[in-house]
Image (cartoon, rainbow, N blue to C red):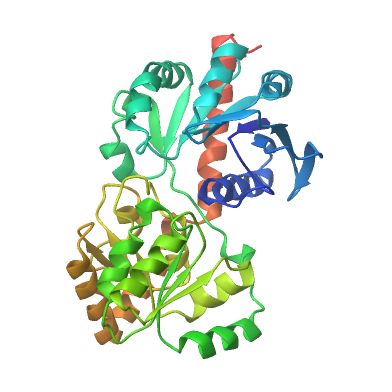
Length: 378
C-alpha cells in the first residue's frame, strides 16, 4: 500500500504541528505495511528529493505566494507522476493549492483529507475560495477531523459530516530525547524548580498577550519557549507592564524541549482563537504528566484537556480567569499532581502515535477496498 501525502511544507524545511503529525503517521503506519512519499513546496532548495526518517520527501520549488499559500508550477507535473504510482492520495487541509492540483490532475485514486483547521484569518479571501473548497471536499472520498469537538463546531465541515470520521493526533514519547540531565540542570538553575511552561510558535492566536497580563505581579515564573512573528510585540508588552517573572527563552532544541517538559510544574496554553485547532504542545504537556490550563474555544484543546480532571479550562481572552487558574494549581500541589496523572493516562488511552496509526491504516484499507469493489480504480 503506497500513500502519497501532499502539504505546503514538510520536514526538513519546517517543523510545525502538521509536519510532526504527518511524520509520526508515516513512521508508525510503515510498520503496519504502508509505504509513504511526501510532496511539498520549498523556497528554492537545490536538492529536490531527500530522505527523512526512511521515506522520500519531494520538494517542488515555490514560485509565488498568496495569503500564506505557496504555489508551484512544477508541482503539477510532480504531483501527477507521483499520484499515478500511489494507491491512495492523502491531502492535508487547509492548503488551497492542493484543491487546484486535485481538480486539475483528475487522478482516479482513493483520496482522503486530514482536516487540520478551518480557515480563520483570511475571512474575505475565504468567500472567494469557498466554492473551490466545497468542490474539493465533495470530491475526495473521506475526511478526517482530529477531535469530535472540532467536527461539531467547524463551519467548513458542517456539510460533510456524513463522510467525516475522527482520528485524534498521536505522539510517540519514545521518539523524544531521554538523555538530557545536563539540560535539566541548566534549566533548573535558569528558571527554578517550579514554573509554568508554554511551548509553541509565537503567533497571534496563541493568546500570549493574555498570559502576560495574567502573570503580572505573580510570584511564580512563567517560561515561554519558542520564536515567531509577534515575539518583539510580546517582549515590548512585558516591558511596558513591568512583568518580571516571564522568561522568553527563544527557539529551543528537542533536548531542551524534553528537559523543560520534564521539569515544569504545569503547562499553560492560552490560545484564544479557533486558529488553534488542536494543540500539539498541549498534548506534549499531557504526555509528560503535567496539569494543563487551556481555553474553551470549541476545538481539540478541550478534547485533550478536560476541565477539573486533567487540568483547568477557562474562557478565552480573560486574563483574570487565567490568573485564577494558575494561582489555583500553584497553591494546590496535590490537586495539580492528580490532574497531571490523569492527563498522562488520557494521553496513553487516546493520543499515542500507535493508536493514530492503527486508525489511519484501517481507513486506508477501507478506502482501497471500496474503490476496488466499485471497479473504478485505475
